Image (cartoon, rainbow, N blue to C red):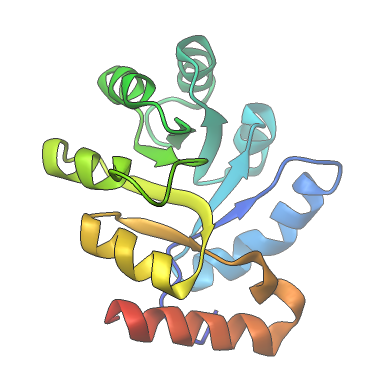
Length: 168
């Protein structure tokens, strides 16, 4: 992470999630990056993760908030649904993420950023061109392309490149 600004690390759900998270937590905290676990509220609580990332569902959100309290962030993937984003935002989600949206037409990110203050994340892997577009439309955070994780140098180069195009 010494290559530039990294806001968070989302550890995907799966059999290695808890072990990977245990290894990543000290590194994330040493670099002021938020450690986020996908879809596993109990592991997030056990590990003391900074956040949990869930599909947009009111009952799942309420359950997570009840387990984690107010000190742990709860973010949601709203797909391309304006309704879900507004609903979960009203319930108190700490951020809304958008995924699977049409990159050619009206941007849901631009719509969100114009109307709401709650941070939004472009969750689909973004090329540098997409990252620049979504950033200019008001995305607070973007997800780089997954191929950055091939090796340490690829990750560092991708972080430097995205930071450069985003003006960080």
